[in-house]
Structures are given as C-alpha cells and as structure tokens.
Amino acid sequence: MLCATGSSKRLSPRTASIRTGPRQSCDQLTAAAPNLIDIDLTGLELLGDAPTAQRLEHLLRLAFSSAGVNDGHVALDVVEEAAIAVLNLEHRNLDKPTDVLSFPMDGAGESIGPRELGDIVICPPLCESVERAVVHGALHLVGMDHETDNGEMLALEAEILRWEQK
View 1: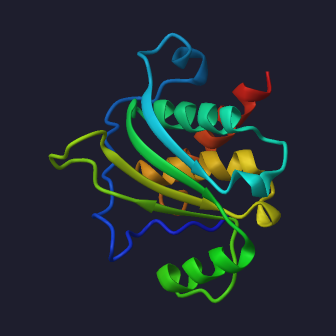
View 2: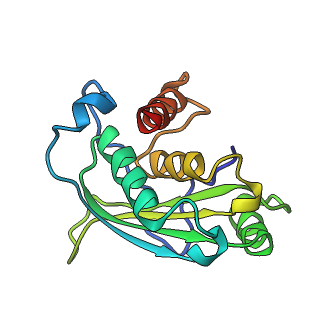
C-alpha cells in the first residue's frame, strides 16, 4: 500500500508517535481504558453497504488504541479515483491514483477540543480491502512507517485484522 505520511503545507506538522513501551495485543485492548477518538466520516455512499460506518469507526478506534492513542480527532474521507489521484500528485508528486493516503497532524500543541490526529483518504476501487486500508492509514497517523520499522507496523496491522475476524 502507498501512503502519504508527510504533512500537507496547509496542515499542522506531523504527529509524533507517543508510544514508548511494548504494544498491547488486541486481546489486551478489550479491557483497556475507554477510547475517546472523535471520528468524522465522509463519502460513505461510495462504499455501498459494507463495511458499515460503525465497522469503520470500530477499526479506527482499535488501530489507535493498539498504538497507544485513546483520544483525539480523525477524519476519514472516501473518494473516487480522480480525487485521490489529485491528492497523490499534490502531496507525493505521483501522477496516479492510490488506495490510501494519510495526512498526520501534530497533536502535541495546546488546542481547544480533541487533539487532531489527521486525515485518512481512501479510494475503495483501488483497495485490496477497505478495512485494511483504514487500519493502515490510522497507523500512519500515529507515526508508524512500514518502510522503516522492520515490519512492526504491518505486523500490528495484520494482528488487528486477525483479531477482528474472530
């Protein structure tokens, strides 16, 4: 999967990963502290019937909790190929559509309201799995990078999706 992990010039700086200790397994998260992630979903009509808004919200909260983030605000936008191609060109200088883009924001500064985690943009026709793309985008927002972390991000992504198939 291709993801934009650099911040937009119009957005705040990149969110730093705040996780310092070992990551919790998905099993441990069922008894974890309440998750206060505020989620805005747009473009869901492009998904048809599945996955549902509730399913996407659940996956986002689980992905953030798995990375040690239990509060903040995230936006998930479902778009068509033309829209994601424009974003990919603007932010990654790649003149083609992609499945998922993540635009992290800095949550370390003082602000009114929930910490801004960032935006995730997905294009369903290009996604191997919409659910995988959503989890993948969320993990990028908390500073994980599969290109530099020796497989940690992709392993966590797979664990989250395995847990959800039970």
